[in-house]
Image 1 (cartoon, rainbow, N blue to C red):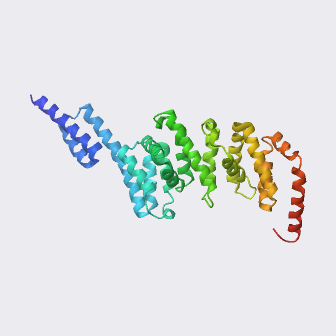
Image 2 (tube, rainbow, N blue to C red):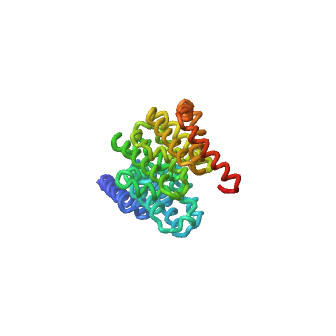
Image 3 (tube, rainbow, N blue to C red):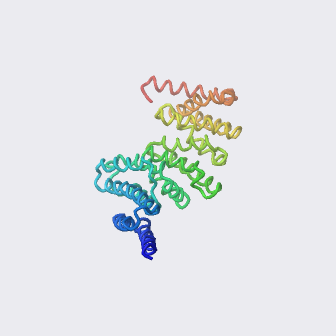
Length: 328
């Protein structure tokens, strides 16, 4: 009878410990409860498993606590502690994941004082399954808001975030996954159209990734505006990193769009040459020289079109004369 009473008590203690761990997050109370259970039945396998679970949960709670301390104090040591805990592979539960995301994305602290928030967020996204699922849900519910919040955290965070659209495990269906891909693609195009965007190569990298992995899911979005963004980013005056990402994207885009893409490319070049200003000519020739190795037939055909060169030469002469006179 005494043995049965002890077993019943241990069962009740295990239930109470689980409530403190999973519902209340009170790990100190859970520890007290498990100590009593261990005293009653030291060899109980379920009690031993509960201790292991508590130890794991306590460590991950420390990671979230370290993130909280980092946000409030701006002390890098807390961020480094959180990174160390997260990299050891312990998985956060739903509540902890939500808290970590909110801490890193919704803090009003000066981002210039939180330089390690980028590697922290990217580590969370890449290594934490529950974080990935929650961010995927955010894309479904409000893609614009979550896109902008992650975008300005930094390169590592945004790259990890953009990779979510290719992870089938975080989406309820293929249809929802494709819609998420289209949302991120549209937002990346819109970001590049907007003047003065910070680090445009981030958005271009997301575009290049999508057209490389699943161009068929966004092919109907490759319209004149999209071509304008991609080809303008090939401007020789742009940063080399942006131009490299643009080259990767436009190569796959031209392959995907075929004759329609060739027509849009030709229209882009012809329109800018017709305008005849230095900026437009630089745009045109930057794009033509970059694209020529990919589709030499298209570029050659363009320059052989009746009137194209005849229109081009006077513009070059005019701009050469202006340059000789010391004008841009």
